[in-house]
Amino acid sequence: MKPRGTLLLFWDYDTQWGGDRSRMPGGRKEWGHLEFVNTERLLELHADHGVPACFAVVGSAALQGERPYHDPDQVRRIHEAGHEVASHSFRHEWLPALGREELLETLRASKDALEQCIGAPVVSFVPPYNQPFDYPQRWAFSLSERREAGARRTDLGTLCASLHETGYKFCRVTYRSVMEHILTRVRRRGPDTPGHAEMIKGVYCLRMNAPGGFNEQAHRVMDLCALRGGVVVVGGHPHSLRSGNTQDERRLVPFLEHARRLHREGLLRLCLPRDLLSENGGSDQ
Ligand SMILES: [Zn+2]
Image 1 (cartoon, rainbow, N blue to C red):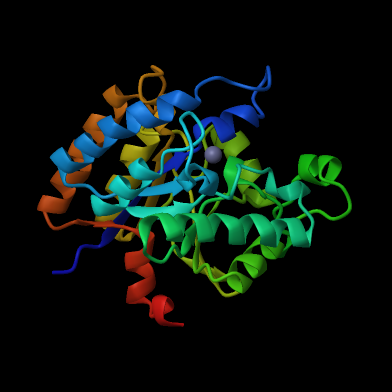
Image 2: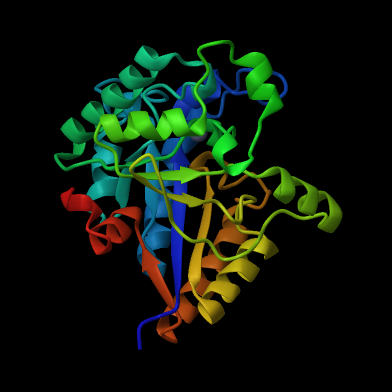
């Protein structure tokens, strides 16, 4: 019997490019070097548990140079271990503020750098900061993006059209409709239902449905997917593996064990975005 549910697990590999452009309070952060040491640990943990992951890598990290900005050897090792290497833009840009040419440039430069590094196609994309959130076609409006990004703003539809134009086929997305925002307030927790793919401007998209690392919600959505079908989309940052928060190794390991158990019981597929594309004929288009 084919498993009903599917797990997609992401690591956003920001390096110091992301630290320099942190949008958290206090601005620039110094955690870039942690991305590399913790990724070594993640490669061990994923191998031990037999769970593949998609590493969304800032393209500049795949260029020659020193840590904490570059480590092309590690990017190659991620690929050679059987994980998927996706693009996380070129230098962790905040995409809503980019005009069309700048957007195309970061998408192309990142894809090129990563493909040169690993010697294989890069077809999946994860936007830095999970933005743009703004997607009026699905009643998702981001007032802060509209206020801060200026007239040449990139919304989710523009991003997906540009991804399609530059040869990407998959995008992880995080928009929320007005109705979902209201429900979140009323229920005091985010949307946690099994996910289903949607095509946006020719790109195969899945929404994060457990955005808080490997917390109870992530376990619950994974159980629901195993029971009813659908996709659980979770993720974290390698640099947070020792943070004590929900992306910590102490939360990750029980999650990997849970995923493995459901997989052994025939209830859950452990997938990569590129696997979903090949099932849907997307990789040949
Ligand atoms: Zn990031």
